Length: 311
Length: 295
Image (cartoon, rainbow over all chains, first blue to last red; front, side, top):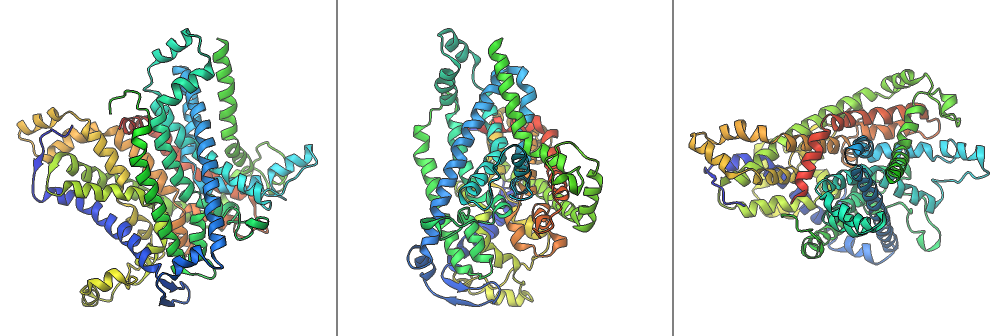
């Protein structure tokens, strides 16, 4: 609906746009380009050495002695993302649907469900690292007083991996519930009443009415959650596991909770700093994100049910 | 109704489970070092003393102060800049609008975390000594483009390094753009007939109408800025300039003798400012989000 009249001015729109455009150009576009250039160099942050080596960094990601670790990290990131996104969204939708089914009675629950929006991955990681510390952690202290078990949460690869997953889901519940609650506000009550008259149970209504109606939001959330799992989970990993522990046989090339962004950080700023290698990884990430975004726009729009809502 | 009661029961349990880690941290933050290590889940009396020791021994107040300053500037700056950018995109006609819009759109898929390597030199290297030196470098566009950057802003350990790169926001521009497009064109026509220029339209019509969007953006941007971690961790090396999220790591730092009661106090305090903003602006936030959803 852009048929409205507009101010005509030669200078003013550019004055309004310039700060935004400048910041984006200097701090997003140029660094993205710089990552590609740096990927062609061998460079050490601490020694300050720099040498042009062409595509070798990129080659080393996929063949040679460094490749198995990268493949493993790639695979882990994939599994991690799926485990964070889908259970997280399902829990959020169920809770949001229950809350909004209560109408005005459900108001109390709203703020109690969305407060984790203000939670940071670092705080989540800090609290978890105390709760699940194998020796001094509260969970084990409590477990020991009731049961013979006291698992070494952060030293056991699978347990540590699952802990990071749980921490991430927990932290992101607030964000997801905010969006689901907002979109459920627009669902007409009549739909549910009609279905109830037809004898549809709670579960049928959830799958037949609620899920399809919020599918545009779910679609949107899958991608924002993916971006969250790929990038923001960093703080949680850094505080909780530092990328470790290393897994058993085929998974012994890298720590099991080392994900793509953590590896960029480790390789670039860790002890044996190799900025060029880390830059090459950033470029792979950029390509990945670009592909996902194209997919999101091209494929997605057709498949999602928009429920006849005005768009 | 029986069903309703069930819903209440399930929701209450869920709410409790979600809050549990935080309640736990809150309780542990009040206990003495001895109690913290026990299974005891009753509040103690040491909260003030725990807070005082991180405040004094770990310069936690500096972290909080730094984070507060950075987050508020980003929150206001981002909202302000994206308001005007969106205004130009919706209410003004100029050439190249589509290209500009695409230019902003693309940055939605460029999270800063992904760019830390490319940003590091640019932000941390020393700037050229003078204009002449800068121009000598800038005069060779091929070198500027195809070689690793030679000069930077020299912002290591300075708050600007965590502020300026985050002042522009595609999210903000979109939220405002969406909101502006829903404003009836007749409003602007009326203000045109009154002979009001763009400034009067902005201040008398648009601002008052944008309360929800501004509120929603305040929450989103404050929380985003407050929760930043990876970039400050990399670019800020000096403790006294560090932000609170990374400061938490310093609290746990030497894993040997961690005072977990103090660490939990730190975690709880870190959460308070964004929580206050969220609660204060809760209504606008929900309305603003609902609006963005009607895309």
